[in-house]
Length: 240
Ligand SMILES: [Zn+2]
Image 1 (cartoon, rainbow, N blue to C red):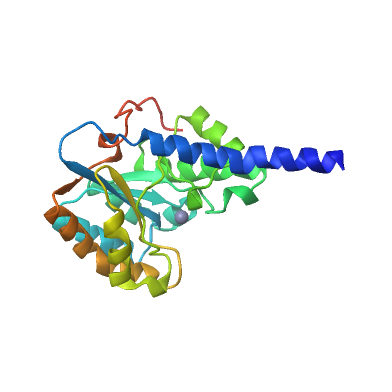
Image 2: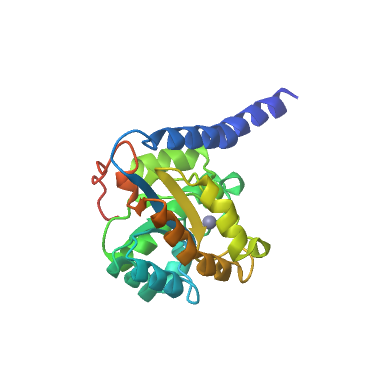
């Protein structure tokens, strides 16, 4: 019985407690006070996607808006030209692991491997160090937290999202859910791939309206460095 209790507490420490802690510090890192004007950061997860990513890039180009793409390593290896296009059009690239598995379901070994392999897959294509990391579903375990710190990767979660991974949300549903959540210094999460089949088409349909409405409300789209408290003081990482 004691062994069972000990394992249970260890599990709580390794998975949920680390996860809550990272979410807590990530919320604290968002700087609500400094800077002028209302700034927001747009981020897209789960790509690159042969069908949807080019459409997202076309919209961003039309509105001259920068974004951060959290790419899945295995998909990036299949579509390296899309990764290069994201980079060439002035957007940032972050890692969203190699396999896109939930952190609570990974062994210590797989926890580290999915991070290292994910980052290496991207760096082999863009020939630049990857700095940003976002865990799938925003969930991290203790092994991953330590490993990310060792590699010098910065965790970026989000504070405005719109269930755009569900097809039934629809384009108008995405706008209705997202816009009231956006505040100065919001990190907006959308998806250019993944979720239910066809769901990213709704995100693409909603995207021009989201950008126009936020710009009309006085928001400018910026990089995460301009929103986080620590600024851009993270250039220590070298290519792995
Ligand atoms: Zn994801």
